[in-house]
Image 1 (cartoon, rainbow, N blue to C red):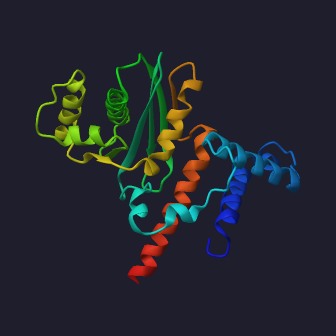
Image 2 (image 1 turned 180 degrees about the vertical axis):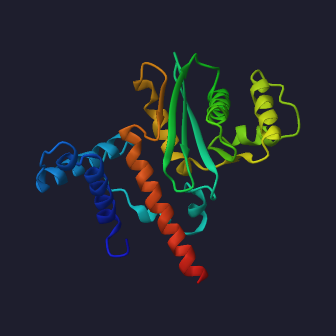
Image 3 (image 1 turned 90 degrees about the vertical axis):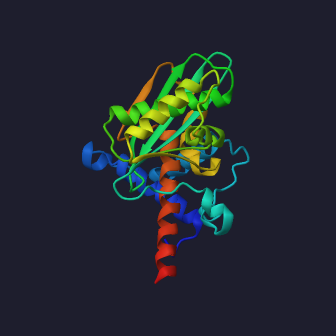
Amino acid sequence: MDKLSDVELELAAVLMRMLWIKNSFIFEDKFKDTESLVRTTKTTLDDFRDVQGNEKGQEFSVSNEARGGERANHRWIKPIQGFIKANWDASLSKYSLGLDIVLRDDKGDIIACACYKRNPVQDLVEAEIVALWYAVKLCNSLGFNRVILEGDAEVVVKAVHSEEENLSSIGHVIEDVKIVLKERRAWRVQHVQREGNKVAHLLAKNSFKFDQEMIWVEQCPEFISLQVLKMQIVSRRHVDRYILKTE
């Protein structure tokens, strides 16, 4: 990791992932030449950038995510050992509401992803509230005891933490979340900047492509898998630098 540039590291990481998931020589007794594999890797990386809306095709730099100062507090950070982190986001159109959840463990690995489609609500704040509730229901149905529910809708997080009863049109959902948090002391809701919620946001951005409810267990759609990998690299670098600093 220290020997390669950020761009080289990104390409190497994707290449290794392609080797892992497309190892046809072992599983299908088919040989894929090196040039073809590298070409596929570059195409996959380009597709990933396009999905993120990077129309100019500029190269992503891991170092931009890993810089110190205020920006460092905006990155996605792995939960402490034994906890699950559930990132949620919502996408709202004229005809539909997309609710999107990404669950990861303390290694940063995907446990599950989910896309739900429901009838549209009044505004994006209500959409985020419903998305949080679906994240709560998903974690509960999977039987997790230690959960960090993380989203970039600060107004929703503040409403959950408020001791006052929420009397808005969808306040009953906020109150239901509060009840769950009281019953499960090892659960909490926290805010993260949009930069730290990129995987869930990317899933939400593309959720309308699906015609029905989608749930992935121990895997995720290809268009967010590279973002997950990128976050793991950034998180690993952050930990390594912290260890060096403390030593």
